[in-house]
Length: 253
Image (cartoon, rainbow, N blue to C red; front, side, top):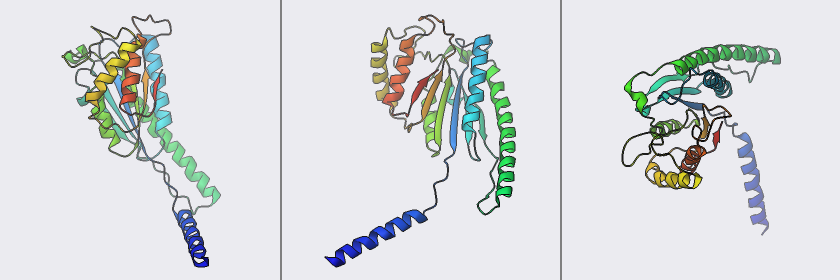
């Protein structure tokens, strides 16, 4: 009995020391996906929409661009969303190893890193805002294929990074076809129908492995928009669909 107790104690001591000696897990990079609606139903020339989306993009960049290896990609939502990548950027600013440095040297290195990162953020912000105001006058602005964003999210998930997804869109799916949704022609009448449609659609869309990204839908509607303009059943459809597909959190702004 004494031998068993001794062995157990030795095992516990070994396990504790092993866990203690393991290096702390480094922060995972963030993969930020931004989908900008470039169809006729979203007009960034309107002052309210432009201001809201400019502020949103600035916040997205400030929150998610933090270290070397962070990625940011911008896609346009229209008829050919999956092939509409407008930007693909990777952060290059790197914090030097200061584990053996003095407090003075560490502070200097941190200041230099912060300044360099802020410069890179400013460059990224400028390029993203240029894409915000880019006009789509081609025929692809006739349809809104948000479903096509799902394989893009799947590819981002395969990188192993923490994936964050932002839709700057009215979320009005509008694609012709017997197995597609066209909310321009036939939107869901209420939340119950929206949930029913979403659960039906999820059965065929579960072929995409999205992981558990955080998703935010940033709508272009003013606070006094009518139900016809800002149909709550449409966002309920997406809340339900994303939930059925196993995403992390879904927010609406």
